[in-house]
Length: 143
Image 1 (cartoon, rainbow, N blue to C red):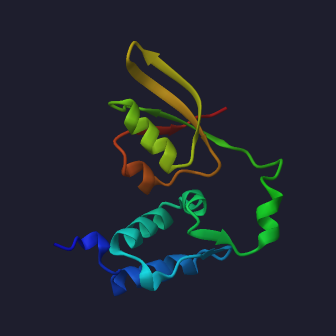
Image 2 (image 1 turned 90 degrees about the vertical axis):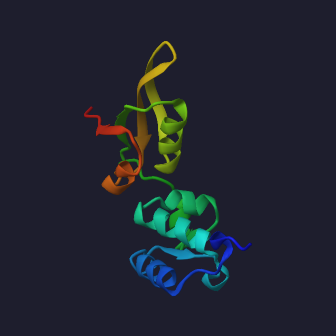
Image 3 (image 1 turned 30 degrees about the horizontal axis):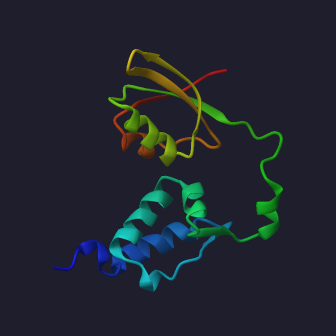
């Protein structure tokens, strides 16, 4: 039995990826969309909608169009944002969210085995859609 995940992407998925990539002026895809499966297309669309470009770059799916920009690194004036994440049932929910937003653990507080909160640092604002995908309370930290 053939799984839907391994079937070729649909025309609708192809159009959505092309629409989302049209908005990305500084990045280009490195993959052949014609050889992409439905599951891969679903993952790509979700990452593009949630602006999780770093994950796609790490996986080699996206590259910067201008190679000189990739060698510069962050500017000294670029400030990271800090978010307080709470309300998770287990460590996995916190870890999965932090990985999805490409965040770095800055601080945390526990009570025995229970995680009360984590403070994470991210390079860009977390989209409301991304927050909605997780059963966590996410608030920006003012410093």
